[in-house]
Length: 291
Image 1 (cartoon, rainbow, N blue to C red):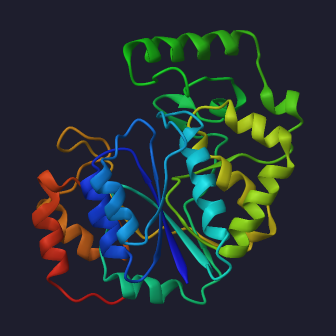
Image 2 (image 1 turned 135 degrees about the vertical axis):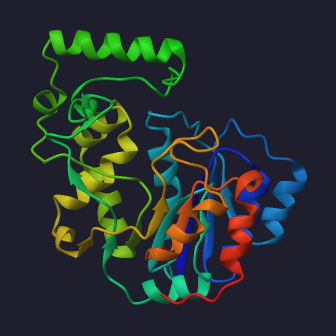
Image 3 (image 1 turned 60 degrees about the vertical axis):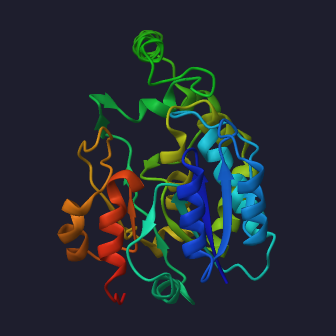
């Protein structure tokens, strides 16, 4: 049995449609951001469809919340001893292939599918991302994408650079720091190791819980510095367009992306918004796919 773990923060109707499509093949676990209001009708629909759902973490972009919500879902899924594999999706994902075919690809599969690169030497938005965990941030309380959040970020980066702040040294971190998207596919034993390691290392908890975008670091850092490194496949089988489209970056996908999706070996795609993506989904689902 395999589990889909969905991190959702908007558009409950779309999330419910996604879960309904996948639940025929997978056990479904969803965490809804506490800022998202669920109606009684939506709660009843989740119950009727036997979908496990939780709403216990407030998720803010750039903060620890999304990682905390992921841990909630991982722990809940592992309570079922029959779960052998987990897939982490966002509420704006959609399967590119038939769910039964996706399931078959990962059945009896012991590999870890995730993108992972050394953080040292990498830059995003002109900043060395190794500093995002070396310095202290508080984006669980401060909205990073607001004007105030942007000013706070610049001042925080400048001040901590001036003061030579180094959490790695202070916390005795001896792991090489790795980063990558938090959308991945992991076998049960890797998830068990990940959670046990994190729970057993207070310094690792303090490092990532006070960092910036830790959801893109904590899993990669722990697993790439472990014996599981040899089983990691640098392919997460997801189509994501890193351009701006329909006012979103990464892009909200539409029918114009259909041909590019067909060219690749993808299992899921994101971002999806039915306002723009309905025809793309219809065309993809009108065809037969093999993996």
